[in-house]
Length: 309
Image (cartoon, rainbow, N blue to C red; front, side, top):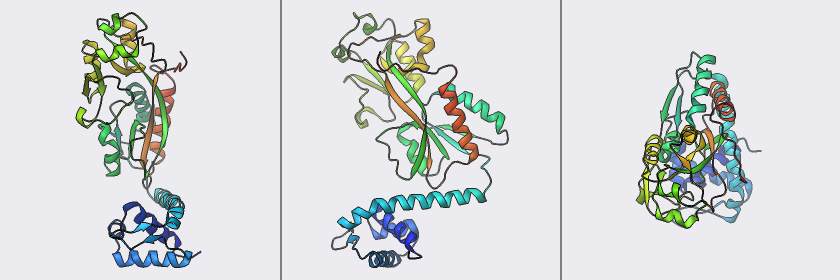
């Protein structure tokens, strides 16, 4: 193996990711000529042309496309190895920042933080609620060491690692005085078209992307769980909410679960912890995630999903 192969693969993956030699040179803090030379050396060693340079921007050849995934995996592992080596040399952070999405289950998080404060009294945490639309970008910008959020296929997860912490089910609810609560049950899905739905969203309605939890065109969007909760209690509209959030309201009769003939399953959200690949959690943050997972699986507010109800 060529002694510079790992570095060459890193350069190759960076160019493929960013789409130009100049962008790769800026990210890697090297000259464009150095980037060009490195790729030339890699192509010579492999006996393949990795980029078509005939156009304005370099384009991966078929051979380059075939090798790109391998290079990405190797680069990712190099980042992890380097980060773990740095971890061995540095002490555990005493003031990590945790970014929390508004819909992350609060009760188990509070129980986990209480246990963490007892086991790690020397650590001073900053726990910051961060809008869904911004949370991964803030993590990428180094504004947090760990994010707690609902995993979404729309979120860019390149350069991040993570682990699942909880699964939560949400159900359609409304005030007992809402027309849907008084409709003959079970009512058809089409009946929802006649009533306002309130959704939790990090962006305005005209910017919102498709969401399979949205059933109507008469929508209100809020970016706060507490505001959504109060609006539903006031009968302004109906909403999907996590069972943890409305258990007391359902028990007291302040809210009721809607009985729609065409909604048979819980709407499931998977909550995760995530971090930058090149900045993995130290043992203290791993312990915190363990405590959060345990709190989400046991204790008050735990949801038992009955998918086939």
